[in-house]
Structure formats: structure tokens, C-alpha cells
Length: 435
Image (cartoon, rainbow, N blue to C red; front, side, top):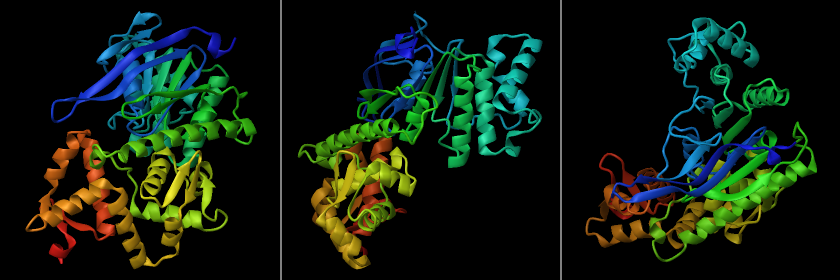
């Protein structure tokens, strides 16, 4: 019997979540999400930062309460953390003053077990996860991969029915993450884990396809399920199989279409200056253009190929691709990125010519940059406080998104010599006034 025909262990029904903006208005981060985690499957939540995937995982684990909708665990309403659900976080979340053994045992405190049972479960979990011999070590003595193994051991010691994992490999180097993923999948495929179902949050596309039986791709602003993609490959999922790459390509196409929708919204006249900007540095933008213009790409390449060549994951890849599209240095179509004529000129230009071209495109295609430049020109002293633009942005964005957007436009404006910014006085200054 496959996972699709098995009963649901965890159900999310009509869940919406919102947080208060500084103005007091609610900012919706999840909108009417339906999701079921079935017995015998690994379900992936894949999406960009800000898509609400970690918030959704915390709601599914009973750590947060939605503003509407409900979560049911094994058929009963979930109201707070429940026995049988364990979480592995991105950060190692270990107590530095406790040994490995004590850290794992601490995860069992709430279960009210006898001392003998606590010790038995702790030793069994350490043995299962490959931590024999490290029982007396302190977290400071361990590598990042070994610390995360302690996190896994602590979760499995509770013998959970459902294991929730929030980007558990993202803080690790590539080789360590690959080893830990492989070990976990070996335990899962060998039915050595007590867990019946796993919910994995990730922003790594290949990781999602390698690990999961089903992938939910989340769209952003607000977070919602854009598409459900089944992974029907035999385990272990082989990267070299054409079917594997077909699934990867489908995910890239889905994320690209969402990026283009977002960019289209940015270019709408109403509120265009108050939309979030993709978090992409000048160095990464320049590096993308230079990489694309050079052999073997000669101006265009699939996003998956670029991601592999530059070792980029979703949260770095798509913001840079979006920035290039937004600035009209490249066209983002389907699952491919293609340089425009302006992008090719940028790649062949010297530093000063690049700055002039970037300035022209910044004023033309980024309304917030043009808005700041216009305000500075209109003022007698050619200066404006940062808080003035913060207040405008925070009427439309979260404080975090407003701050990130201002940091991006500041970096882009400085590079283009469109305006300067004095961090001490927190003021934007016209370049001519600065000089």
C-alpha cells in the first residue's frame, strides 16, 4: 500500500495566520492552507523565505495557533504540543552545559518516564543515530554535523509518530548535510525509526526531491500552496535518472512563474514603490551576468544549471534572478534565464560604464529608487531621514521586509551613485549634496 492510500496522521484545514504590522493592521502570512500528512510518507514543504513554510510547520506542531482553521492530529483537534510529535530545528538548540547524553535525555523530561526508561531510550537513540562514544562530550566539542545528530537523537528518543523538521541540514556544509541526509533516509527506508510520518521544511530543491514522497510548493505574500508534486521514484531517489530531473525542472518552472507574478505586481502603478525588492547584492548580480555571458552559456542557461555552477539554493538563486529580470538585465522565462542586450553590454563594460547603465535601469525600473531620488531632489537640503521611507513601506510590508527592502535599495543606489546614505544620522543624501 503506498502513502497516497494510507490514512492521514496530521491534517491542516483552512489554516490562516497573520501578524500585526506596526500600524496595527494584520499582515497575512498564510492564507487558507489545506494539508495532510499521511502515514508512511515524507512530505516536503518547499518555498522561498517569507512563504510561511516554517510558520506552517510550527502550527502543525502545536507551537503556534492559527487565526483561523484547525489542525487535527490522529483525528483529534490539536491544541498545543502533543505527545507523539517531535521537532528538529535548523539551529542545533542544545544546552551547552549538558553532555550529549544529558541533552538527549532532557527531551524526555515532559513524558514523565522512569529513570530507567529514560536511560534506555536515550542510549537506544544515541546508538541509532551513530553517537556511541560521544555520550560524555559537550556540544562545544562537536562539529556542526554531530550537533545536529544530537538534535535528531533527542527527537527520536521520544519515539514520535510524527517528526517535523525545519530546514535541519541548512546550517551544515554540503558534504556533512549529504551524509546526514543519507543516514536518515537509510534509517527511514530500513524502518528503523519509530516515526510513521515526516514533514520536512526546505528551500533546497534537490533535497526535497531526494527525500520526499510528495512536495508542496508554497507561494508567498501570503503563503499558500501553489502546487502539489508527487515523487513516484523508487527509493533511493537517483539524481541521474531523467525522471528525477523532470521533477526538479517542474519545481523550477513553478517557482519561476511565481517570481514573474511577483515582479508583475511590482510594476503595477498603484503602490509600485512600496513593494519588496529581491534581496540580491551587487556582487551577486554582477557575478550572474558575467557567468551567463561567458562560455559555455553565452547569454542563457537553465536556472538549475546556474544554481549548480554557483552552488546556490532557492533563497539566493531566485532573488538574484528576479533582480536581473526587474532591472531588465535578463529575462526570466520558464525555467531559464536569458541576458538582454543591456545585460550583455553590462558584462562587457568597465566599472564606470556599468555604474552608469545600472543607474539608468535603477531609475527606470525600480520605483522606490526613483521615489527616493525625487524626494531628495525636491528638498532644499537634498536630504531625507530613513524613517520617512520606513513609515511608507511599513504601511504595506512587515517591518522586516521594509528594512530589507531599504537595505537593498540603499546598496543599489550607492553603487549607481544615485544617492548616498549616512548610517550615523540615518539619512539619505543626494550625491551632489554629499560631494
